Image (tube, rainbow, N blue to C red; front, side, top):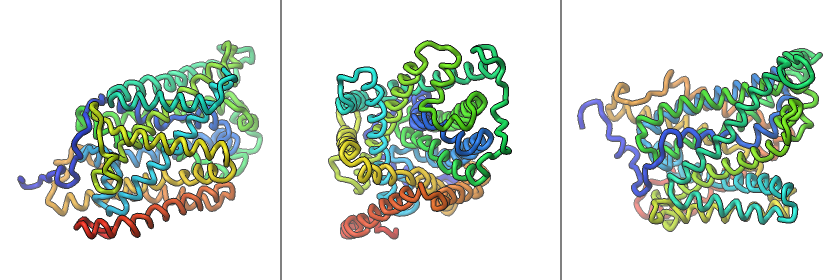
Length: 474
Protein backbone atom coordinates (compact mmCIF):
# COMPACT_ATOMS: atom_id res chain seq x y z
CA UNK A 1 0.00 0.00 0.00
CA UNK A 2 1.50 3.31 -1.03
CA UNK A 3 1.77 6.17 1.41
CA UNK A 4 -1.44 8.16 1.78
CA UNK A 5 -3.72 5.47 0.33
CA UNK A 6 -6.16 3.22 2.16
CA UNK A 7 -7.63 -0.05 0.88
CA UNK A 8 -11.37 0.61 1.14
CA UNK A 9 -12.10 -3.03 0.34
CA UNK A 10 -10.38 -3.99 3.58
CA UNK A 11 -11.95 -1.10 5.47
CA UNK A 12 -15.51 -2.06 4.52
CA UNK A 13 -15.51 -5.15 2.26
CA UNK A 14 -18.00 -5.37 -0.57
CA UNK A 15 -20.29 -8.38 -0.30
CA UNK A 16 -20.08 -10.28 -3.58
CA UNK A 17 -23.02 -11.57 -5.60
CA UNK A 18 -25.23 -8.63 -6.56
CA UNK A 19 -25.05 -7.34 -10.13
CA UNK A 20 -24.02 -3.79 -10.97
CA UNK A 21 -26.71 -3.06 -13.54
CA UNK A 22 -28.15 0.26 -12.32
CA UNK A 23 -27.47 3.35 -14.40
CA UNK A 24 -27.36 6.92 -13.08
CA UNK A 25 -30.92 7.62 -14.26
CA UNK A 26 -32.12 4.59 -12.28
CA UNK A 27 -30.32 5.80 -9.14
CA UNK A 28 -31.84 9.25 -9.51
CA UNK A 29 -35.40 8.00 -9.83
CA UNK A 30 -35.02 5.37 -7.08
CA UNK A 31 -34.17 8.12 -4.62
CA UNK A 32 -36.85 10.48 -5.92
CA UNK A 33 -39.38 7.65 -5.90
CA UNK A 34 -38.63 6.85 -2.27
CA UNK A 35 -38.79 10.51 -1.19
CA UNK A 36 -41.72 12.00 -3.07
CA UNK A 37 -44.75 10.02 -1.94
CA UNK A 38 -48.41 10.46 -1.20
CA UNK A 39 -47.57 12.96 1.54
CA UNK A 40 -46.87 15.70 -0.97
CA UNK A 41 -49.97 15.05 -3.05
CA UNK A 42 -52.39 14.55 -0.14
CA UNK A 43 -50.99 15.96 3.12
CA UNK A 44 -49.27 19.13 1.96
CA UNK A 45 -52.46 21.15 2.47
CA UNK A 46 -52.38 20.34 6.18
CA UNK A 47 -48.86 21.75 6.45
CA UNK A 48 -49.98 25.03 4.86
CA UNK A 49 -52.98 25.14 7.20
CA UNK A 50 -50.82 24.55 10.26
CA UNK A 51 -47.86 26.81 9.50
CA UNK A 52 -49.37 29.35 7.13
CA UNK A 53 -48.15 29.99 3.55
CA UNK A 54 -44.74 31.46 4.44
CA UNK A 55 -44.24 29.06 7.34
CA UNK A 56 -44.87 26.04 5.11
CA UNK A 57 -42.28 27.24 2.60
CA UNK A 58 -39.76 27.82 5.39
CA UNK A 59 -40.48 24.35 6.75
CA UNK A 60 -39.78 22.66 3.41
CA UNK A 61 -36.64 24.73 2.90
CA UNK A 62 -35.32 23.63 6.29
CA UNK A 63 -36.28 20.00 5.59
CA UNK A 64 -34.46 20.17 2.27
CA UNK A 65 -31.40 21.68 3.95
CA UNK A 66 -31.24 18.82 6.46
CA UNK A 67 -31.58 16.32 3.61
CA UNK A 68 -28.68 18.04 1.81
CA UNK A 69 -26.46 17.71 4.89
CA UNK A 70 -27.27 13.99 5.13
CA UNK A 71 -26.52 13.36 1.47
CA UNK A 72 -23.19 15.19 1.75
CA UNK A 73 -22.22 12.79 4.53
CA UNK A 74 -23.55 9.75 2.67
CA UNK A 75 -21.80 10.72 -0.57
CA UNK A 76 -18.32 10.44 0.97
CA UNK A 77 -19.14 7.01 2.39
CA UNK A 78 -20.96 5.64 -0.68
CA UNK A 79 -18.33 6.74 -3.17
CA UNK A 80 -15.45 5.36 -1.10
CA UNK A 81 -17.31 2.14 -0.18
CA UNK A 82 -20.28 1.44 -2.52
CA UNK A 83 -21.72 -1.58 -0.69
CA UNK A 84 -25.33 -2.78 -0.90
CA UNK A 85 -25.88 -2.52 2.85
CA UNK A 86 -24.87 1.15 2.79
CA UNK A 87 -25.44 2.85 6.14
CA UNK A 88 -26.26 -0.49 7.81
CA UNK A 89 -22.84 -1.84 6.82
CA UNK A 90 -21.19 1.44 7.77
CA UNK A 91 -22.86 1.35 11.19
CA UNK A 92 -21.54 -2.18 11.78
CA UNK A 93 -18.03 -1.19 10.72
CA UNK A 94 -17.64 2.33 12.09
CA UNK A 95 -19.86 2.26 15.20
CA UNK A 96 -20.47 -1.35 16.34
CA UNK A 97 -22.13 -4.57 15.16
CA UNK A 98 -24.94 -3.80 17.61
CA UNK A 99 -25.52 -0.46 15.91
CA UNK A 100 -25.48 -2.18 12.51
CA UNK A 101 -27.99 -4.79 13.70
CA UNK A 102 -30.32 -2.16 15.16
CA UNK A 103 -30.00 0.13 12.13
CA UNK A 104 -30.73 -2.64 9.63
CA UNK A 105 -33.71 -4.22 11.37
CA UNK A 106 -35.23 -0.87 12.39
CA UNK A 107 -34.98 0.40 8.82
CA UNK A 108 -36.37 -2.87 7.44
CA UNK A 109 -39.39 -2.84 9.75
CA UNK A 110 -39.97 0.84 8.96
CA UNK A 111 -40.10 0.34 5.21
CA UNK A 112 -42.01 -2.96 5.32
CA UNK A 113 -44.78 -1.26 7.31
CA UNK A 114 -44.70 1.72 4.96
CA UNK A 115 -45.24 -0.68 2.04
CA UNK A 116 -48.44 -1.81 3.78
CA UNK A 117 -49.57 1.80 4.02
CA UNK A 118 -48.74 2.33 0.33
CA UNK A 119 -50.70 -0.79 -0.67
CA UNK A 120 -53.67 0.37 1.40
CA UNK A 121 -53.66 3.81 -0.23
CA UNK A 122 -53.39 2.33 -3.72
CA UNK A 123 -56.01 -0.32 -2.95
CA UNK A 124 -58.54 2.24 -1.72
CA UNK A 125 -58.12 4.31 -4.88
CA UNK A 126 -58.54 1.25 -7.10
CA UNK A 127 -61.56 0.17 -5.03
CA UNK A 128 -63.20 3.55 -5.69
CA UNK A 129 -62.89 2.87 -9.41
CA UNK A 130 -63.92 -0.79 -9.22
CA UNK A 131 -65.92 -1.18 -5.97
CA UNK A 132 -66.81 -4.82 -6.67
CA UNK A 133 -63.18 -5.78 -6.02
CA UNK A 134 -62.26 -5.57 -2.29
CA UNK A 135 -59.31 -3.48 -1.14
CA UNK A 136 -57.42 -6.54 0.11
CA UNK A 137 -57.57 -8.11 -3.36
CA UNK A 138 -56.03 -4.98 -4.85
CA UNK A 139 -53.33 -5.00 -2.15
CA UNK A 140 -52.52 -8.63 -2.95
CA UNK A 141 -52.35 -7.86 -6.65
CA UNK A 142 -50.02 -4.91 -6.09
CA UNK A 143 -47.84 -7.14 -3.91
CA UNK A 144 -47.51 -9.69 -6.69
CA UNK A 145 -46.72 -6.95 -9.23
CA UNK A 146 -43.92 -5.43 -7.15
CA UNK A 147 -42.57 -8.87 -6.25
CA UNK A 148 -42.28 -9.77 -9.94
CA UNK A 149 -40.59 -6.46 -10.78
CA UNK A 150 -38.06 -6.97 -8.00
CA UNK A 151 -37.41 -10.67 -8.61
CA UNK A 152 -36.78 -10.57 -12.36
CA UNK A 153 -33.57 -8.53 -12.09
CA UNK A 154 -32.24 -5.35 -10.53
CA UNK A 155 -32.31 -3.78 -13.99
CA UNK A 156 -36.03 -4.47 -14.41
CA UNK A 157 -36.68 -3.01 -10.97
CA UNK A 158 -34.64 0.09 -11.81
CA UNK A 159 -36.46 0.52 -15.13
CA UNK A 160 -39.89 0.17 -13.50
CA UNK A 161 -38.99 2.68 -10.80
CA UNK A 162 -37.67 5.08 -13.43
CA UNK A 163 -41.11 5.19 -15.07
CA UNK A 164 -43.08 5.09 -11.80
CA UNK A 165 -41.16 8.07 -10.42
CA UNK A 166 -41.27 9.76 -13.83
CA UNK A 167 -45.06 9.92 -13.64
CA UNK A 168 -44.87 11.67 -10.27
CA UNK A 169 -42.30 14.16 -11.52
CA UNK A 170 -44.39 14.89 -14.62
CA UNK A 171 -47.48 15.51 -12.47
CA UNK A 172 -45.58 17.92 -10.21
CA UNK A 173 -44.15 19.86 -13.16
CA UNK A 174 -47.60 20.02 -14.78
CA UNK A 175 -49.08 21.28 -11.50
CA UNK A 176 -46.41 23.98 -11.13
CA UNK A 177 -47.04 25.23 -14.67
CA UNK A 178 -50.84 25.09 -14.34
CA UNK A 179 -50.83 26.63 -10.85
CA UNK A 180 -48.58 29.48 -11.95
CA UNK A 181 -50.91 30.15 -14.88
CA UNK A 182 -53.84 30.25 -12.43
CA UNK A 183 -51.97 32.74 -10.24
CA UNK A 184 -51.55 35.15 -13.16
CA UNK A 185 -55.06 34.66 -14.52
CA UNK A 186 -53.90 32.99 -17.73
CA UNK A 187 -56.29 30.09 -17.11
CA UNK A 188 -59.50 29.71 -15.12
CA UNK A 189 -62.22 32.29 -14.57
CA UNK A 190 -61.00 33.85 -11.31
CA UNK A 191 -58.68 36.46 -12.73
CA UNK A 192 -55.17 37.05 -11.44
CA UNK A 193 -54.82 35.74 -7.88
CA UNK A 194 -51.19 36.75 -7.54
CA UNK A 195 -49.85 36.46 -4.02
CA UNK A 196 -53.05 37.59 -2.31
CA UNK A 197 -53.36 34.33 -0.37
CA UNK A 198 -50.08 35.09 1.39
CA UNK A 199 -51.93 37.89 3.20
CA UNK A 200 -53.28 35.84 6.08
CA UNK A 201 -54.75 38.79 7.96
CA UNK A 202 -52.83 37.70 11.04
CA UNK A 203 -49.17 38.28 10.21
CA UNK A 204 -46.62 36.09 8.48
CA UNK A 205 -47.21 33.22 10.90
CA UNK A 206 -50.99 33.14 11.56
CA UNK A 207 -50.74 30.34 14.13
CA UNK A 208 -47.50 31.62 15.67
CA UNK A 209 -43.92 30.63 14.97
CA UNK A 210 -44.16 27.59 17.26
CA UNK A 211 -46.65 26.10 14.79
CA UNK A 212 -44.04 26.59 12.08
CA UNK A 213 -41.49 24.86 14.29
CA UNK A 214 -43.78 21.86 14.74
CA UNK A 215 -44.50 21.71 11.01
CA UNK A 216 -40.78 21.65 10.22
CA UNK A 217 -40.48 18.47 12.25
CA UNK A 218 -43.19 16.78 10.21
CA UNK A 219 -41.79 18.17 6.96
CA UNK A 220 -38.36 16.68 7.67
CA UNK A 221 -39.99 13.24 7.43
CA UNK A 222 -41.19 14.12 3.93
CA UNK A 223 -37.62 14.18 2.65
CA UNK A 224 -36.68 10.82 4.09
CA UNK A 225 -36.08 8.19 1.45
CA UNK A 226 -33.38 10.16 -0.35
CA UNK A 227 -30.83 7.96 1.44
CA UNK A 228 -31.98 5.00 -0.68
CA UNK A 229 -29.38 6.03 -3.25
CA UNK A 230 -26.74 4.79 -0.81
CA UNK A 231 -28.24 1.29 -0.86
CA UNK A 232 -28.54 1.36 -4.64
CA UNK A 233 -24.87 2.40 -4.94
CA UNK A 234 -23.94 -1.23 -4.29
CA UNK A 235 -25.48 -2.15 -7.65
CA UNK A 236 -24.44 0.90 -9.62
CA UNK A 237 -22.48 0.40 -12.84
CA UNK A 238 -19.82 2.98 -11.97
CA UNK A 239 -20.28 4.34 -8.41
CA UNK A 240 -17.38 6.81 -8.45
CA UNK A 241 -18.76 8.38 -11.63
CA UNK A 242 -22.51 8.19 -11.04
CA UNK A 243 -22.93 8.78 -7.29
CA UNK A 244 -21.58 12.38 -7.10
CA UNK A 245 -23.73 13.45 -10.03
CA UNK A 246 -26.80 11.69 -8.69
CA UNK A 247 -26.39 13.12 -5.17
CA UNK A 248 -26.29 16.66 -6.53
CA UNK A 249 -29.19 16.03 -8.89
CA UNK A 250 -31.35 14.47 -6.17
CA UNK A 251 -30.93 17.44 -3.83
CA UNK A 252 -31.72 20.06 -6.47
CA UNK A 253 -34.70 18.21 -7.91
CA UNK A 254 -36.35 17.16 -4.66
CA UNK A 255 -35.98 20.56 -2.99
CA UNK A 256 -37.22 22.39 -6.09
CA UNK A 257 -40.17 20.03 -6.56
CA UNK A 258 -41.25 20.34 -2.95
CA UNK A 259 -40.61 24.05 -2.38
CA UNK A 260 -41.99 25.32 -5.68
CA UNK A 261 -45.03 23.04 -5.45
CA UNK A 262 -45.74 24.24 -1.90
CA UNK A 263 -45.29 27.86 -3.03
CA UNK A 264 -47.82 27.41 -5.83
CA UNK A 265 -50.24 25.59 -3.50
CA UNK A 266 -49.96 28.34 -0.89
CA UNK A 267 -50.54 31.00 -3.54
CA UNK A 268 -53.60 29.34 -5.08
CA UNK A 269 -55.40 27.96 -2.00
CA UNK A 270 -56.35 30.08 1.05
CA UNK A 271 -54.43 28.69 4.01
CA UNK A 272 -57.55 28.15 6.12
CA UNK A 273 -59.11 25.98 3.40
CA UNK A 274 -55.99 23.97 2.58
CA UNK A 275 -56.24 21.67 5.60
CA UNK A 276 -59.69 20.32 4.76
CA UNK A 277 -58.97 19.42 1.14
CA UNK A 278 -58.50 15.71 0.49
CA UNK A 279 -56.28 16.43 -2.52
CA UNK A 280 -55.10 20.05 -2.89
CA UNK A 281 -53.45 19.25 -6.22
CA UNK A 282 -56.73 17.96 -7.66
CA UNK A 283 -58.52 21.04 -6.26
CA UNK A 284 -56.24 23.39 -8.21
CA UNK A 285 -56.52 21.37 -11.44
CA UNK A 286 -60.29 21.35 -11.06
CA UNK A 287 -60.42 25.15 -10.72
CA UNK A 288 -58.45 25.48 -13.92
CA UNK A 289 -61.10 23.45 -15.69
CA UNK A 290 -59.12 20.31 -16.45
CA UNK A 291 -61.61 17.47 -17.08
CA UNK A 292 -61.54 14.54 -14.64
CA UNK A 293 -58.98 16.36 -12.46
CA UNK A 294 -59.81 14.25 -9.42
CA UNK A 295 -59.51 10.99 -11.37
CA UNK A 296 -56.20 12.03 -12.91
CA UNK A 297 -54.73 12.92 -9.52
CA UNK A 298 -56.05 9.69 -8.03
CA UNK A 299 -54.13 7.82 -10.73
CA UNK A 300 -51.01 9.85 -9.94
CA UNK A 301 -51.36 9.13 -6.21
CA UNK A 302 -51.84 5.41 -6.95
CA UNK A 303 -48.68 5.42 -9.06
CA UNK A 304 -46.91 7.39 -6.34
CA UNK A 305 -47.85 4.80 -3.74
CA UNK A 306 -46.65 1.92 -5.92
CA UNK A 307 -43.42 3.79 -6.67
CA UNK A 308 -42.69 4.31 -2.97
CA UNK A 309 -43.55 0.67 -2.27
CA UNK A 310 -41.31 -0.48 -5.10
CA UNK A 311 -38.33 1.47 -3.73
CA UNK A 312 -39.05 0.26 -0.20
CA UNK A 313 -39.20 -3.41 -1.25
CA UNK A 314 -35.88 -3.05 -3.03
CA UNK A 315 -34.24 -1.43 0.00
CA UNK A 316 -35.61 -4.03 2.40
CA UNK A 317 -34.38 -7.01 0.40
CA UNK A 318 -30.87 -5.54 0.07
CA UNK A 319 -30.63 -4.73 3.76
CA UNK A 320 -31.60 -8.28 4.73
CA UNK A 321 -29.09 -9.69 2.24
CA UNK A 322 -26.34 -7.44 3.60
CA UNK A 323 -27.08 -8.34 7.23
CA UNK A 324 -27.09 -12.05 6.44
CA UNK A 325 -23.54 -11.69 5.12
CA UNK A 326 -22.50 -10.10 8.43
CA UNK A 327 -24.17 -12.75 10.57
CA UNK A 328 -26.81 -10.27 11.73
CA UNK A 329 -29.67 -12.05 9.93
CA UNK A 330 -30.41 -15.70 9.01
CA UNK A 331 -28.16 -17.12 6.28
CA UNK A 332 -31.09 -18.07 4.05
CA UNK A 333 -31.78 -14.37 3.53
CA UNK A 334 -28.46 -14.17 1.69
CA UNK A 335 -29.44 -16.53 -1.12
CA UNK A 336 -29.67 -15.07 -4.63
CA UNK A 337 -31.71 -16.26 -7.59
CA UNK A 338 -30.24 -16.73 -11.07
CA UNK A 339 -30.61 -12.99 -11.73
CA UNK A 340 -28.59 -12.05 -8.64
CA UNK A 341 -31.63 -10.89 -6.64
CA UNK A 342 -32.03 -11.76 -2.92
CA UNK A 343 -35.41 -13.41 -3.46
CA UNK A 344 -35.94 -14.57 0.13
CA UNK A 345 -35.52 -10.97 1.28
CA UNK A 346 -38.24 -9.86 -1.15
CA UNK A 347 -40.63 -12.58 0.01
CA UNK A 348 -40.11 -12.14 3.77
CA UNK A 349 -40.60 -8.39 3.41
CA UNK A 350 -43.91 -8.95 1.66
CA UNK A 351 -44.84 -11.38 4.45
CA UNK A 352 -44.35 -8.66 7.09
CA UNK A 353 -46.24 -6.26 4.85
CA UNK A 354 -49.15 -8.72 4.78
CA UNK A 355 -49.14 -8.99 8.57
CA UNK A 356 -49.21 -5.19 8.78
CA UNK A 357 -52.19 -5.14 6.42
CA UNK A 358 -53.99 -7.58 8.70
CA UNK A 359 -53.48 -5.30 11.69
CA UNK A 360 -54.79 -2.40 9.60
CA UNK A 361 -57.96 -4.37 8.95
CA UNK A 362 -58.55 -5.84 12.41
CA UNK A 363 -56.79 -3.53 14.87
CA UNK A 364 -56.35 -0.13 13.22
CA UNK A 365 -56.66 1.83 16.48
CA UNK A 366 -54.18 -0.25 18.46
CA UNK A 367 -51.63 -2.53 16.79
CA UNK A 368 -51.55 -0.81 13.39
CA UNK A 369 -51.39 2.65 14.96
CA UNK A 370 -48.49 1.53 17.14
CA UNK A 371 -46.66 0.00 14.17
CA UNK A 372 -47.07 3.10 12.02
CA UNK A 373 -46.12 5.41 14.87
CA UNK A 374 -43.00 3.40 15.70
CA UNK A 375 -41.68 4.18 12.21
CA UNK A 376 -41.97 7.91 12.81
CA UNK A 377 -38.53 8.27 14.40
CA UNK A 378 -36.70 5.91 12.07
CA UNK A 379 -35.85 8.46 9.39
CA UNK A 380 -34.24 10.94 11.79
CA UNK A 381 -32.39 8.15 13.60
CA UNK A 382 -30.99 6.74 10.35
CA UNK A 383 -29.85 10.21 9.30
CA UNK A 384 -28.06 10.57 12.65
CA UNK A 385 -26.38 7.19 12.09
CA UNK A 386 -25.16 8.26 8.64
CA UNK A 387 -23.53 11.42 10.02
CA UNK A 388 -22.01 9.49 12.94
CA UNK A 389 -20.55 6.92 10.52
CA UNK A 390 -19.05 9.67 8.38
CA UNK A 391 -17.28 11.20 11.40
CA UNK A 392 -15.87 7.85 12.49
CA UNK A 393 -14.90 6.90 8.93
CA UNK A 394 -12.97 10.13 8.43
CA UNK A 395 -11.14 9.67 11.76
CA UNK A 396 -10.16 6.10 10.93
CA UNK A 397 -9.17 7.00 7.39
CA UNK A 398 -6.77 9.67 8.69
CA UNK A 399 -5.44 7.38 11.45
CA UNK A 400 -4.54 4.76 8.82
CA UNK A 401 -2.47 7.32 6.95
CA UNK A 402 -5.01 8.23 4.30
CA UNK A 403 -4.81 11.63 2.62
CA UNK A 404 -7.94 13.69 2.03
CA UNK A 405 -6.90 14.52 -1.55
CA UNK A 406 -7.17 10.79 -2.36
CA UNK A 407 -10.87 10.71 -1.50
CA UNK A 408 -12.96 10.99 -4.66
CA UNK A 409 -15.57 12.97 -2.71
CA UNK A 410 -15.05 14.82 0.56
CA UNK A 411 -17.89 16.00 2.79
CA UNK A 412 -17.36 19.78 2.85
CA UNK A 413 -16.89 21.82 6.01
CA UNK A 414 -15.96 18.75 8.06
CA UNK A 415 -16.78 18.27 10.93
CA UNK A 416 -19.41 21.04 10.86
CA UNK A 417 -21.70 19.28 8.34
CA UNK A 418 -22.02 15.92 10.16
CA UNK A 419 -22.26 17.58 13.59
CA UNK A 420 -24.97 19.95 12.35
CA UNK A 421 -26.78 16.97 10.83
CA UNK A 422 -26.80 15.17 14.17
CA UNK A 423 -27.88 18.28 16.12
CA UNK A 424 -30.76 19.17 13.78
CA UNK A 425 -32.11 15.63 13.70
CA UNK A 426 -31.81 15.25 17.47
CA UNK A 427 -33.71 18.53 17.74
CA UNK A 428 -36.47 17.08 15.58
CA UNK A 429 -36.63 13.97 17.76
CA UNK A 430 -36.73 15.78 21.09
CA UNK A 431 -39.14 18.45 19.89
CA UNK A 432 -41.79 15.76 19.33
CA UNK A 433 -42.30 15.94 23.07
CA UNK A 434 -43.81 19.41 22.74
CA UNK A 435 -46.62 18.18 20.48
CA UNK A 436 -49.05 15.98 22.39
CA UNK A 437 -50.35 14.43 19.18
CA UNK A 438 -46.82 13.15 18.47
CA UNK A 439 -46.21 11.51 21.85
CA UNK A 440 -47.25 8.12 20.49
CA UNK A 441 -44.59 8.55 17.78
CA UNK A 442 -41.91 9.39 20.33
CA UNK A 443 -42.74 6.63 22.81
CA UNK A 444 -43.49 3.80 20.39
CA UNK A 445 -40.43 4.62 18.29
CA UNK A 446 -38.20 4.64 21.37
CA UNK A 447 -39.66 1.33 22.56
CA UNK A 448 -39.06 -0.27 19.16
CA UNK A 449 -35.46 0.96 19.10
CA UNK A 450 -34.72 -0.35 22.60
CA UNK A 451 -36.33 -3.74 21.95
CA UNK A 452 -34.29 -4.35 18.81
CA UNK A 453 -31.03 -3.38 20.49
CA UNK A 454 -31.82 -5.50 23.56
CA UNK A 455 -32.50 -8.50 21.33
CA UNK A 456 -29.05 -8.12 19.83
CA UNK A 457 -27.37 -7.65 23.19
CA UNK A 458 -29.12 -10.60 24.85
CA UNK A 459 -29.19 -13.15 22.02
CA UNK A 460 -26.87 -12.16 19.15
CA UNK A 461 -23.91 -10.72 21.04
CA UNK A 462 -23.12 -13.92 22.96
CA UNK A 463 -23.14 -15.97 19.76
CA UNK A 464 -20.80 -13.53 18.00
CA UNK A 465 -18.37 -13.51 20.92
CA UNK A 466 -18.42 -17.33 21.03
CA UNK A 467 -17.69 -17.39 17.29
CA UNK A 468 -14.79 -15.00 17.73
CA UNK A 469 -16.53 -12.07 16.05
CA UNK A 470 -16.58 -8.47 17.40
CA UNK A 471 -18.94 -7.90 20.33
CA UNK A 472 -21.47 -5.14 20.78
CA UNK A 473 -18.79 -2.88 22.18
CA UNK A 474 -16.25 -3.34 19.39
